[in-house]
Amino acid sequence: MQPAFLSNGTGVHRAFAAACVLHVLGVLALGHYRQPVLVENGAIARYLLAGEGFASTVFHPLPVPAEATAGPASKRAPVPRMMQVQPTSSQAPGYPLLLWALWKILGDNAGSLLLLSLCQALMVSAIVYPVSWLAGRWFGAPAALPAAWLSVLLPPYAFFATRFSTAPVSIALYPWLIAGWLSLADGRTWRRALLVGVATGGALLFNPVMLGVLGLLGVVLLARAVRRRDRLASGRLCAGALLVVLVLLPWTVRNYRVNGRVVLVKNSFGKELWIGNNPRTTGLSVLPDGRMSVFSLYLPTALQLPADATEMDVMRHMQAEALAFIRSDPAAFLRRTGQKILWFWTSIPARALPPGSARLKFQGLQQAYWGLLLALAAASLPRLPREYGLLLGIIAAAYSATYGLTFVEHSRFRVDIEFALIPAAAATLAWLWQKWLVGRRGPSAPASVGA
Image (cartoon, rainbow, N blue to C red):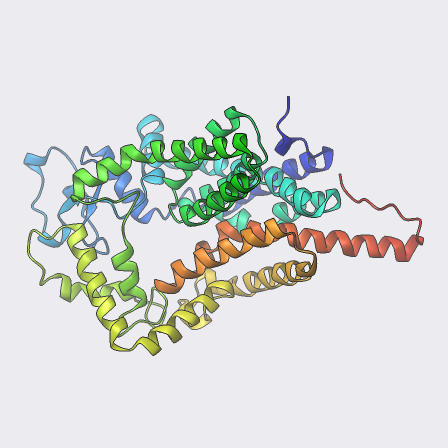
């Protein structure tokens, strides 16, 4: 029997095919796989290939020379203290392990990254199915097809499918997971509980920020099932949650052995809190000229730390400095937090982008599509179903708290949750289409515009 998410009609299948073509062409046209930007994920993957384990340097802004990770340890060139390799828990393990496995099998080359890019393009394209299902659930069949096509045409999806970060994985998995947990609350099979629980645990190993949304959603759905005395739905929701814990447990145990403290997936909160809350902070990751990282200001302080300082020592030190700065002026902290939340839900100022950067060139397009999506979604607010409104509230609260406390950056920080506005925007488009049909053909126009 075909899953409900995949049985949305021929129109949605055509939208998926169009998305595949568009996103694959984007991969080939942008050619990012030829000169990739891999930052921390790539560095950790290469340490894995070199036999160092899941490791990084304590202060990652400094480059690590090739001779520092080449050959057996006994014959390596001396590495300065600031560049000593240590086990890391500052990054989620999913993407570095994915790169490591890919390079282990196919080699560290453009061909392997092209294959990864194409897989990401297909994964991102497939969100037309859960997004159209969600739109149909909340607004009826007429909204399903517009939701699918909005998923196809949203500009950041074509762009981020080509990037080597957690963004394309988060984009691809988030709507499937939301749809999966909602279906468990509807009383789906135990097999669905197994699939949703394991998939959620795996997704959190790529992007643990999802935990805030999916955890709160799961608690609300469980409370609703208990209130209506639906034992089957309650049992399946609990089983799914237990499987999430079991999937995360091995990595949590590894982190405890490395750090001597519980770190569920990753811990870079101290650094991120400091970036967004220090005497020179702009609320962004860069200084006002857009060229220099705020984190670079911390390096003189880091040089004064003990020679055996660990990654978690650095995080604790930065967190303590940030908290002291917050306590020194609580009113300024509240203003700064509000500004960051506003930037997160709109766009960061152009002054924070380096002159001539690609992000600056496309900022107008980003603001245009995002403004249009917000306007279309806002038009459906009067008809917002309770379940959908609750989900939007959970997402808004979780992400506003996360990035209001830390710092904001480009649209990569928001792109994985933009799908949540598509059902409301699609409902507005379906309503406008219906009004146009009625105006053109008269009251006898068909009521449904679904696939």
